[in-house]
Image (cartoon, rainbow, N blue to C red; front, side):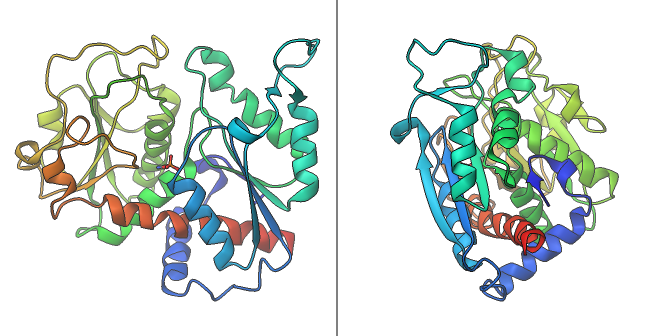
Length: 320
Ligand code: CP
């Protein structure tokens, strides 16, 4: 594995989940694989889970880890070519990425979208430049359009907790106070659509009108603007807010209450409730669910380690 950016970088979904669950049982079986190898984690945006779980995964494999908070500690980056750098940017991504590639065997990058320039965000301009100029394998720690470590974690968690061979999984839009990226729902959707193709899940997306995701990520999904209907018989409900893709980054008022709570949970097949975190309590998801027996959010966050470890292990095996 040279790059981990989307579901296209994994051809064996069931196998990668099995491998991750094997690592969960025996985290230190490959503790020498990463000896004298260095992972660099580069953050242009905040993170708790991605940062700590990926560090832990790398340490389980015997790697050294360096974290660079570019947003706080790095020089202001210029990402465009052909500009005279006489403004606020101090270092070009060409040099910054190349230098970090000199120090590290594998790099991870987190770079959120602007939510202003749809074309630059959806062509993954920054992420692709980083990959091009750093010259080492790169793991997405969440890019403008996708969050693959989160989505792999989610598939691992669903596989671990499913009670039937092909569970019904519902991605349910939830309210929020600000415009959020589409990266998590895009990514969850493309992973679930591929899992559905392979007979692993039955996948539905429920959102209010105006919040359609890009069709690039939703091929094969059942899509509805009726939350109550969608929740019928659900085994897993994946709660997440996102802003509009069509009117890029816009937030529309929604009359109906889309917050997931115990009343709505009654419509499901006693569904397990998931969220990538951080979550705004009693806005996106009720406290009664988060503190109750149906919540998987902590187990889901815990599984971030095994998703990161299986990806790092595959990359290290290619390097060694
Ligand atoms: N879910 C997730 O990626 O969490 P962080 O933003 O805290 O890393």
